[in-house]
Image: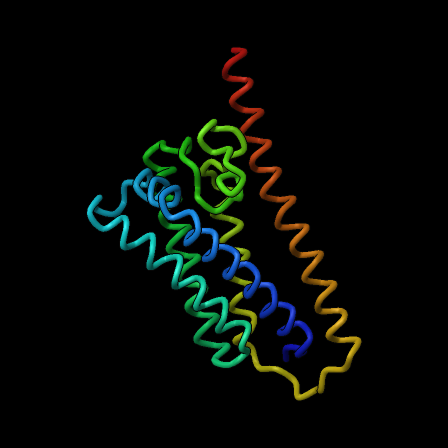
Length: 189
């Protein structure tokens, strides 16, 4: 049985993740279109529409998580979306195209992706990260106890989300740093 406080933390976490990601894709449509095109999975003519639809879908999905209703369909939709992203990353890794920006970092939000510094290149770590996120989303589908949440549960949920945001950001920064270190080593070699 899943404690409702854990369910609340997961719902808040996916709300923040998906609203942030969807908003980022919609406010940086041209940059995201270029990233989608670099994946070379969709026909070029579909890239603009796919970029818009992905951003809108993430935003709507984030709001569904925030509303707290339809948790099971939201969890499955999130898991399928993350699995599709992991598949797209895996396909490009198998093609040997690890040098492209994954589109999931925040380098383009601060305007650094054009310099190729601070981008989050494709790696198996991103696929593993998505697997962990998929598992986290599907935890919400487990039966929950009937325990009522108190004020301390809500405070704990907010603090736990802050910690998760820090861990997520730190993980992404480590991947960006790893990309930079590898490129420096190639330049020195």
